[in-house]
Length: 382
Image (cartoon, rainbow, N blue to C red):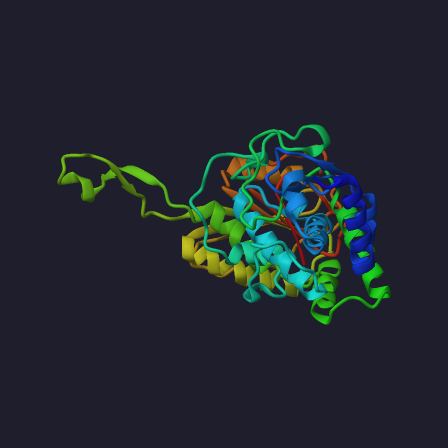
């Protein structure tokens, strides 16, 4: 058996020499040997490696493994995984994103690592949303499917290990790290590699877009609305004809779609009207498909106006009001009106955000505010 601790130090030195992009994370992330992990895993703060698996790898594959797990942390896959996502499939999507980047850097990956050219230059979220969805499983960490559970010492997962679809390490969700800390990690890695002249052109463009994100909100919006309104359910109001001939009375799939969406617009003057109209057009496409009616509510410190749109009426958003921003009046409105989901356009400077907790699925649409974070709902940025 090789002296693993000594080999670990050699691997870290080889990685430092190969790519400055990983230098900071490579020097600061604690690494623990853990035989309960099939290969390797990270929660963004700690890396765990199975010693038997590590011993079988070549020196070049060990460097690739380290870079792979560090990428999950630097790119904040642990914090970017959305509630409700299948965790095994999220790991597949993240592996495709990471392994494309590592190939561009010239790394040698352990055998079996997931790689497909069709995912080149695609973000973690874009890859996940483009993959065929698997049948939903049981619960998981914060509503994530396919693993998870309460995190224990050093952020180690308290339940069964997450399946490792790529055979070279996984990540576990970790919502404890503030988003601005994740951005700082990525910025440090990006600038270190750029100063060293190591960034391939496609990688530089992709990482630059992550630090100064373009308006890639359509996939997130459609995913949010489809999760809320697009799932079919069973009903006993109509028997399943397939089984009637066998004298079984079973429910059939409900064919009645529909729903009620609340769209809140912060009128404090921070939202570009063109952005609103583009977003409205995208919402309309999903609304027509699922027959969703919508109420638009304009609000600053109080509600300034309301507009109702039937499912076949296109949205036409024109903010009214101005001044400060409070969200409790809006969440109270949604509760009274029995809205099924909320989309909230805002800059994010909200006076009562700490004490206002929504009771509905919530999508925050944030303009020009990278520091905004909220545990209640999903956040996308324009």
